[in-house]
Image 1 (cartoon, rainbow, N blue to C red):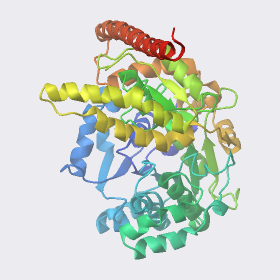
Image 2: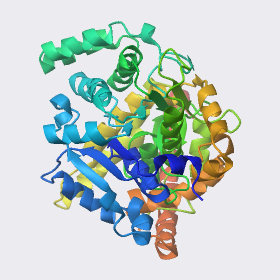
Image 3: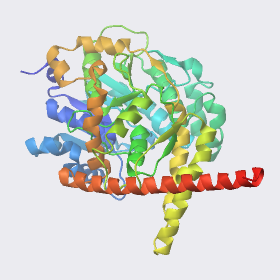
Image 4: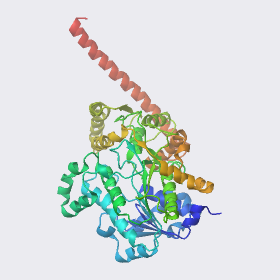
Length: 500
């Protein structure tokens, strides 16, 4: 028997942006697997010479769709890609495709975004802010629209330490319409040169342009049945459709993978700070429930502004960055990578200047040695170039790894209580029940397979353990040599000073 949410989605037509991304793929899979949606239109741009149909065809071999395709090989026929681009005027849609959406779509999920923290401002504005306006303008033409879910981020107002489920226009030093006017008027270089002035207290262009988009929603949503979803840092799947699935190196998972490979050994990190991480499958479950809830309450005037839903770890089951590091460290011998470059370990410091000093010894000096060996073998050096990129990303992420925010989640908790027991089973997003030990036990094997491209199964794990034991021996020898050398130097200095 269908649940309330499944009944709502039966024969619905959905339009999704960001469908080719990490969050979008999991959302599409869950809708196809648990509901009888009639069609899912997905805005996709051409990439690397592939047209939109070719890009969707590659999903047939994507692990996230594997179980679904085994049960229904033709299920992706319900997905209809539309050529478009959030960087383009009018989202790059043809007139016929736009009219198709206007006539048919009932539910919209706007998840397209650039999540690069220091994206040039003109690009971040186009994708994260202007596209939100274009999506609202399109939605206002949709004749059958019942729900619009806008995906923001819990860190859109990171300049506040206590983030409530409300809008914060007071944190912007220039109104969003004025900023968009500047974007349309100025050339890209001049717009980017204005970044420090426009950002003000915001640490990067990502959070700033997400905050601008929220002001657009507050000011211009009008009568749209719209809500704003603010998830924390989205990490690999907890349970569905497979545990530990992820396809990118953004955020904390990228740092975890670098540490597991043995080339990230030092990072700025406050081990006591709360980690605002949320599994992607829980995010998707909540998004699906949000559209149902928004449609059900569309005729009720519950909020003067479109409601906001913060989605972060529960205070009943908190997780710190120290927990994140320690849980992974305990499991490194259980799920080792065969591609590791050295024995995995991760030292942390809260001091950014100390981090910048220590990277010379933890990263750069070994990197130069490694690249020298590559050059002597006639191969192209690569590690120093990689470290420069890693260090730049780490410094951008540093404020988010050092600060604890308090998030109000009253609306989210109210939404959870509105779900029937049956829907709570199918669309679970209750963060108060997440067992983080269980999460990492499930997630780390996925990191090996989906990011590391390692072979699943015990044979691959055994090879990894053999390699890990070798590196442990080499690491112990190196530590002994370094300490012996340091002691010898110190002893020589003492002898010279005191005539010992």
